[in-house]
Amino acid sequence: MSQNKTLFERSQKVIPGGVNSPVRAFKSVGGTPIFFKKGLGSKLWDEDGREYIDYINSWGPMILGHAHPQVLKAVQEASFDSLSFGAPTKRELEMAELLVKLVPSIEQVRLVSSGTEATMSAIRVARGFTKRDTLVKFEGCYHGHADALLVKAGSGLLTFGEPSSAGVPEDVAKHTLTLPYNDVEALKTLFKEKGDTIATVIIEPVVGNMNLIIPHMEFLKTLRELCTKHGAVLIFDEVMTGFRVNIGGAQALYGITPDLTTLGKVIGGGLPVGAFGGRRDIMQCLAPIGAVYQAGTLSGNPVAVAAGLATLKLVQAPNFFEDLTKKTKSLVDGLTKAAHDLDVKFSAQSVGGMFGIYFSEKAPTSFDEIMKSNKEHFNQFFHHMLTSGFYFGPSAFEAGFVSIAHTDQDIHQTVEAAKEVFQVLK
Image (cartoon, rainbow, N blue to C red):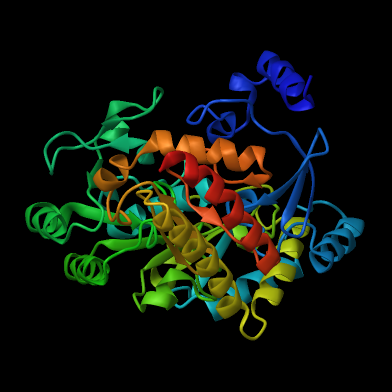
C-alpha cells in the first residue's frame, strides 16, 4: 500500500479531516493527499519516493525553490543563537528597515507570525484609526480565517454579511460588507450610500484565492480615490503577491499605493512570518504608544526572520523578477498553445511568479466568471498531471506558483505531459 494512503488513514484518526489546512485534503478534486518528505529546487519527493515538479511552492513562499543553500545557512546560523527570545533582536529591525525600503506604502511595520494575524491586526488598527466599524471585502478574496473575514454577502449589493463559517457570531459578521471584484459601479454605489461609515476596505490587488484574477486598473484607481475621499483606510493584502509579482509587490507593479499593506509567505522564506505596515500616522495607533492592542510572543522570531532576510536579499538580484516572469509566462503560454492546438476550451494567465489556469474560453475577471469554468475538466487535468509527476494545487480555485529554480526543461516536460490530458479532454 502507498505510504500516502497509510499516513492519511492514520492522520484522520488524530487530525480533523487528516490535514492541518483544509485545501490539503484533496476534497475538491478527490483522491488521497500526498505526504511529502523532501524538496530541492523545483522538485519534491513524497513518502513513496516519487518525484514531482512543484507548482505550489508551499502556496508561494518558496520563490527560490526548496532548500536553497543560502537560506538554509541563515537558518542554521540563527538557530545556534537560540530559537526564540520574546525580546527585540537586530534581525527583526533589519527586516523592518528592508520592508520600509522596498514596499512603497510602508513607513512603519510590525512583524507577526502569519498572514491571518497580519490581516486581522491591520483591520483592527484601521478601525481604531478611523473610529468606524464597517469592513468591506470582495467576493472570492481570502484574507485568512479571522471571524470578520469569513463572511459572504447577501443577495442584495448592500446587504450586510452573514457568516460563511460555523463559529462566527452574526454580531461580528454584520459589520462586514462584500462586493464583487472588478465591479467599478458596485464600488461607487456602496461609497455613495455608506462611504462615511466605512472604516476600511481590504483587497487582494491580484487575487490568488479564487484562482488568479487580475484587477482592472480602473477598478483599483476608483477604489483608491473613493477611500481617500471618504476617509476609509485602504488595505492591500499582499500576503501572496508581496515579493511574488514585483520587488515592491502589486502596489509597485500597478502604481497604486494603499494606506496599509499585509505581508507573509515570501518574507519568511518558508518559515512562519507575517507583517503589516503602512502610513506612520495609522501605525502610531498601536500599543505601546497607541490605544490599539496587538501582541505576539513569537512575533519577529529570529530564525524565521533570518530565513526571510536571506530570501529577500536574493530576490533583489538584478533581473530576478524579469527572469521569474519569463519562466511563468513560458509555462502558461505553452499550456495554452497545447490546449488550443487540440481545440480544448482552456485559458491561462500570469503575473510575476503567479499563474492561473482555467478550463474556460477566456481568463475570468470575477468570482461569477471563475465559477462557470469546467471544474470536472480541471479535476481530470489535476489527477493526470499528479500521476505524471507534476504537483498543481488540488483545487480549481487556487493560483499556482513558479520558482526561480524551475528550468526550461521542467516547463517543457510539464507542457508535454499536459498534451496527453488535453488529448483526452478534446
